[in-house]
Amino acid sequence: MQDLSVGILQFDQIWQDKTANFERIVALLAAQPKIDLLLLPEMFHTGFSMNIELADNWSDAEGIHFLKQLAQQRAMAIYTSLMVKDQYAYYNRGVFIAPNGEVTCYDKQKAFGLGGEDQYFVAGKSETIVSYKNWKINLQICYDLRFPELVRNRLDKFGTAAYDLLLNVANWPEKRIAHWDALLKARAIENQCYVVACNRVGTDGNDLVYNGHSQTIDMLGNYLLAPHEQECFYVVHLAANSLIEGRKTLPFLKDA
Image (cartoon, rainbow, N blue to C red; front, side, top):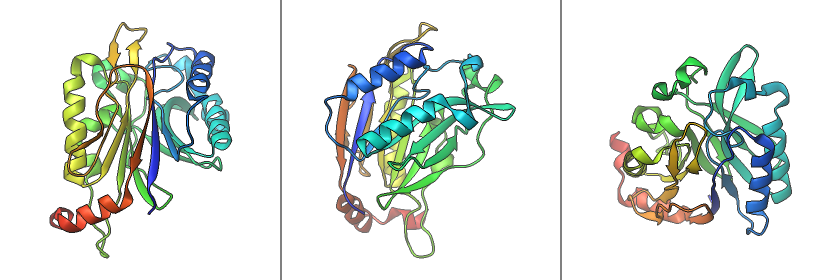
């Protein structure tokens, strides 16, 4: 493992306007430094919408074309989600785009019933762990965060943890932001991993208000990036050795 630089773009998504969101992302990243990995909020080019007419056709997804081009131009990986139609079903699909354009998918396992997501989107059936720069990275989307059993870390027969970094991209509203803060910290501590989470800011087409609180937490529950509420691009550096030595000092995963 090498150290990993991660960028978090906490921005005000433009409601159901893909082109405008593409342009906004490019503009906000224009003067930013080189990083290894970028996180964008959930349903990055539409906002958290149930308008499935806006879903990209998975076989030729406009959003994927944009993300691949961005990843290749900036030589970085990207993680976010978008709504897609795959054959006859709709998904809130997480996509991890490698710098070479390779795509790894994760379908959100817990559809947000309170917002009607379960009426439109098919839930995923399993977790996805992707390998990148020798980091094992577990992918999550928003509401998944409330269900710790989905990402319980564990050791294999060689004593190696299943993953090192948990990513969550979200549209998590201000009125429940205290839950977001508490749950993210719990995931980092109980799984002895880094957690990096990207939320949006602004008000969406349903008049829901979002106040960000994107953040990064280490395995001890300490903030490497504390929650902030303004639109901004944040960069955090994840130290591989701190994680390795921390797990040696506190070998709690062996008792899981």
